[in-house]
Length: 393
Length: 123
Image (cartoon, rainbow over all chains, first blue to last red; front, top):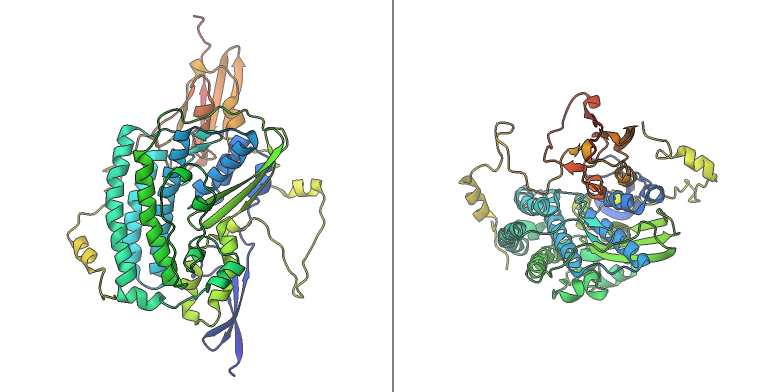
């Protein structure tokens, strides 16, 4: 048996786009154990939400993630509407679906580029990011921003879709569909790509289930789950679509799922535009939210995102809790890394499409002996340490 | 079925393509209508209800009462996230979002915009 070595990666490392720490135990080139440590990017968003009104929080939660920002703002709006017992207009539901699915297209194309880059296939990276510009432009046309759309409001959406915008969207979708079909072709036929990802990062179905994997990571291992179908929110209950799964379980399986989902998302947007009901886009909601609690689920591009909100009858929420999909998927990463080689680390970690700043909602620091490092601080001290309690100049 | 070089078609196509970038600032790309740029304050219609101040997520707007029915507004454009909530919350539409997005500057103090209103004329 060869000697074991520990390879630390991160928090700052060229492999990682965001700060996190990995500790790999190696036996030669083979990974025999992996440890992931989070908490380098904790921003205290949940606490900050308690200091702001519901309307301000909508923009705050939108900034949890830079890529799937619409996920969190819709989740927050849905939870608040649930507490208020407000039914949003049908048109607003469809508009939420349109923007949500366009965001899924943009996120999956971004992931395809990143995956291509991680395996040294930069041509794919350049091409998929070039085509991602089309969907980014569509989002800018519809919402006014490329990211952090500020499209939602409590009780509906803020902006209606005009005739010209619909025409531009349909035109853009045509190009996108053609390109995505081409990428599907590349992902399933190109020898360079398949040779690099097939059999890498294998996650069996039982492990995906026991480790609570969500989204394309789970569906790539043959677990048939999708919140859009299982617990429809917005207008998903009225829109026909297929849930893409793959039984491969490796990185190639996850790629097939994501590319297939992109094509499916294009069809959903097209269906939603064709069946867009007329009417108002916002329901009137009070500023103060009655006491109550709600739990909202949303199928983000990376998997199921959940948000819990508790109201206490004032203008500000009592508690907000967000579970981003990456947190659910990180547990399965360790399993996929075992018995792989060091050179496979980038693509295996990238295969879950990690978004670590979304994940860092809370952090518990363990001491060297494994016991949690705890410190009791009172409310006044916590307030003193927080940045937002100080008035801005 | 595996096929080597499935990506070649796109590579050849790109050799004959026009560049997608433009020579900024000599040329500019068209901005979609929905884009939210610098917010602008119109003092003559402001009633001082402070809804914009209450709803701003980044505390980037300040309204001061100078005299009866005369208000001054300060936008902290460095803090502004250009969400347009102030424009939406305003019951008199005194704040509007423009298409002016070229706000890059070296001195941050330039980004503080103050606009004072003249006393409103009785109708």
